[in-house]
Length: 139
Image 1 (cartoon, one colour):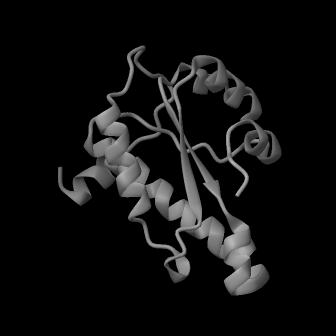
Image 2 (image 1 turned 90 degrees about the vertical axis):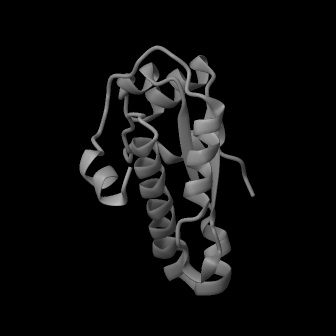
Image 3 (image 1 turned 120 degrees about the vertical axis):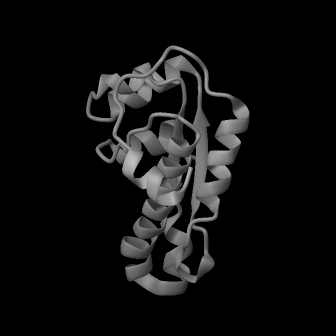
């Protein structure tokens, strides 16, 4: 699939098939995410793959009760590392560059998943601290 074709085909999908996503596809998607641009090439993110159904349900409840998320066979949680940017760019790095970097990585995730024939939806509404303590690592 060409880049423009993936951009034009990408849609937010909220109903998923009840079948696992192949590990090879997930690693391809993560590889494309890590190749996203980042300020100062700091790559201030971590990617957490969630396939445990109970944990996916918990994440759905922390995503402002968007329970359709619980139907997904896998989640990729993108965790920003704002302290890393703050060391180099101060408050602007922490509050802006880190978010922009994660957004670029997420867009790569969405487009590469589309290219691989997978449905996705970017979820931006969630209880940050609950997701952080439940899924994301502290660096």
